[in-house]
Image 1 (cartoon, rainbow, N blue to C red):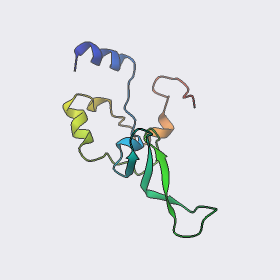
Image 2: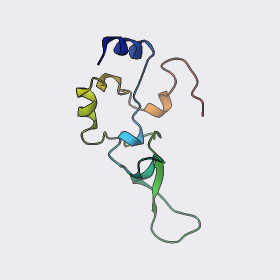
Image 3: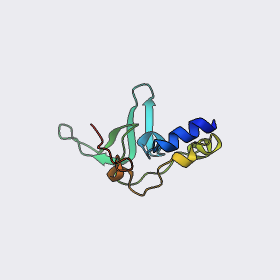
Image 4: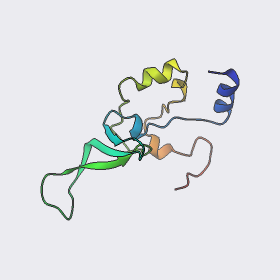
Length: 106
């Protein structure tokens, strides 16, 4: 990675969040839309009867627990020198926005 790019990223507190798109539990059949399903989170649909359904999630979403890096992603990030930006905090969601003392807008 270019040394100047690395410096600017670090100076700006850049972090790669542990989001669903990097998690091994997400299936994302429609990559363009960014939506998929979580293989371990389920819910019971109020309008339909039957087995619980897999929870729909977005690739940029972050949950409170169960994140496990998708196979091969961490090593790819390490090789390309992005690994140091992976958020090392235990609970990414509750810490979002705190590193730079900024509020997260939704």
